[in-house]
Length: 247
Image (tube, rainbow, N blue to C red; front, side, top):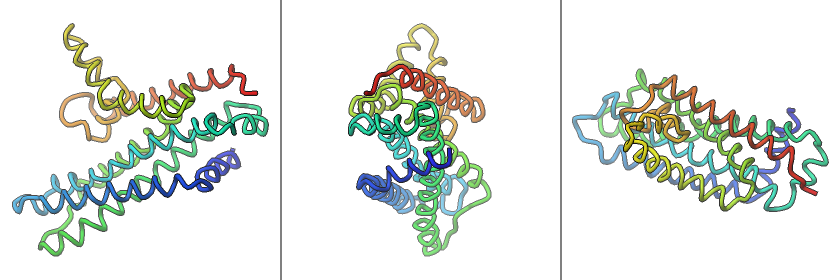
């Protein structure tokens, strides 16, 4: 299995796409962190609330992990490498499992990189302003961001395994998270079932890492729902891949 995971890393780093992913993640995270610190009110400096808000800038890593997860699967079909992949590893479920494990590791790395970048920008800036970054209440939040990014990456693998076509998978899933879930939740509210919307994947993972604001599921139930969605999509994707003729 370790060889299959290493092969996934090789597939990523031998394409130029990873440079774009990295630059986009660094740029978005850096701008968000600088903007949060630069616009902070003087009265909030040194507070745990501001430190957590600054750290939330690292949340762009979740989006990046989700996109990479989708692409890691769909590129096999887009570029026609899926046939060779399955010839080398006939047990197709092992290929999908390796992709899931790879994205869990990559998600953790992306989150850590984003957190380090945020701290590298925020801490010196706050020191210059005569303040400091409050760490006592943000360590647990940082860990939640890391786990959330890992789950988003694994969720992307499941989406890619179910859809296969890259453009519909990317566009459809992003629209679903940004618009579709809110619309479904609003429609459910018409029949007093709005709480059901909290169990949708995007809303559950946002509740887990705290980016969804107030309301919704609490942390642990939200995390459990997120894991359930990851497992469900992985199983559905595995079933589709096992039955599909890729010759």
